[in-house]
Image (cartoon, rainbow, N blue to C red):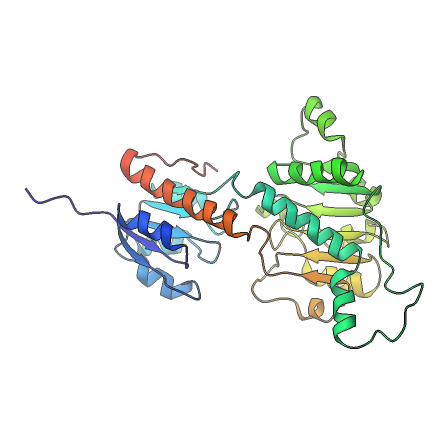
Length: 326
């Protein structure tokens, strides 16, 4: 009797050799050797005839894609967020989806705090100042920024990453902590974090010295921070977005920075990434990074490993380890 054929799996973005070796022990694998991810039609064409796929946020799977790949059974997203997936369409088609929660929490929190420090203290602006040869003498008022220690941090989105940032803020920098979330945390969790709940985003924006976004993207969160919200913030405030592009209206933010409605911003995600609003690129007091908050080697390997484990578990047992359920 001929052995059963292995399921066919697409790895649509470059990943680690050790993960590919593990996948090849279980599947017939078509892997992207890099350097750029397969997207759009190139991705869809390669997805034909595959039962599974290992994805990043660069690939979109929605109803239109699913209609072209009827044999698809499982997609494993190498990210905690999954706004690149139409979960309702996947569920209707009987396709399992998974993500990678937990493994990137602390690394992403580190980066969020790094962005806050860099923006508030004008670190990247100072480096550009030096490299351009503008430092002629030491001045008492040169590149004055805002203190982070002892200030008030407002966090919108108090899931795992938001809470990890809160711990750094309170225990590492002696900050006062406000948060706004879809659901209020239990009193014991608030007490452990030293967090005070703001029932509206408007309350948080008006009181915080620095605002950090760590919430998932949903249609309801689109442009959660726009011109009206930015106008509520203190002129000395910093805004940091490590959540998802589209939560902030990037052009409204550029106007607010240009008009000194707020002092600074740190952005790792953008509404139309990898394209950036030209207005942002023209500004000094914004720190821009290319969606790398989880980009330590150890964490990215853990993300890829969990995504691979999800694929293997699904095809062996019919269940993913960390399925997306909504």
